[in-house]
Amino acid sequence: MEASRSGPQPDGLVRLALLKHDIEECEEAEPQWDAVWNRAVAAKNLVDLDRHDYHQAAVLTMITINRDSNRVLLLMASEVKDADARDLDKAQAGSSEFR
Image 1 (tube, one colour):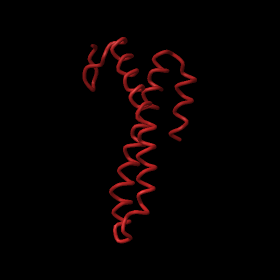
Image 2 (cartoon, helix red, strand yellow):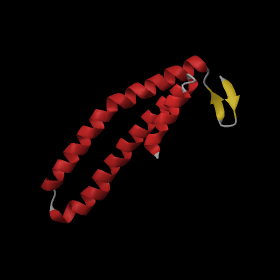
Image 3 (cartoon, helix red, strand yellow):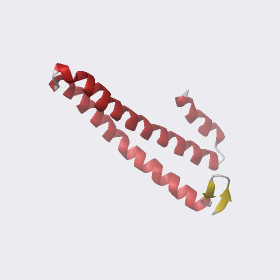
Image 4 (cartoon, one colour):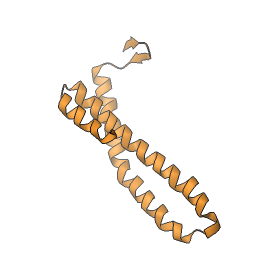
């Protein structure tokens, strides 16, 4: 590992393995987060009216944060992998989802 200002950085093969692992885990998690979201939205009809604000703030907001965080990690890991492979057009195209 080489050192940088932010701390040790993994070498090429380790970095590639870490990126591959992150991409695979995030891809597997996406449909799971979608299913959790759909169930939570459907459950809103079962929540007492006086608890709707809580359901929105505590349940739906937390699912949104985690679901979107998973998506961002997937996109970022994919972009870094593409950039490391010198496929800069593909890497830059992926970042358009952030804009």
